[in-house]
Amino acid sequence: MRHLKSIIILLALTTALFTLRAQNEENGPLPSKVVEAVKKGNAAELKPFLNSKVELVLPEESGIYSQEQAHFILKGFFEEHKVTSFKVLHHGTRQHATYAIGEYKCPQTQYRMYFLVKEVKSQPLIHQIRIEKQD
Image (cartoon, rainbow, N blue to C red; front, side, top):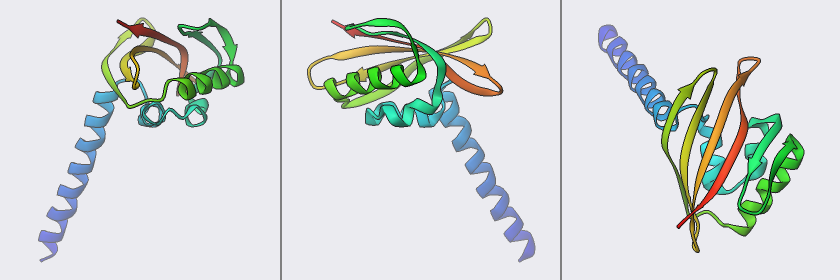
């Protein structure tokens, strides 16, 4: 009986590990909380993952902004373009950074979102977000 409990615990831990690994591979360098924040169009939940300076390239404006400014610009984008779905399409590594490309859909149109992520003090932070309207 004791042996059976050990096997069950080992199977449960293995399943949890594979589930977490699959989620990480699916989202690539983007923490799952970032993906969830974008899926909800929630800039406040995205804010902790923004670097102190963030380059934003949006259809309406672009520039390098403080974390606080970037938060408000993204909040405006999410309010104006309500998300219906978001998924990570591709991710990879280039030099000392990782990137992810996602598909952001809203009722009127669809956008391609690009994220550039670099580690700062062992924490992955977003350094650039590029949002391009798809035709």
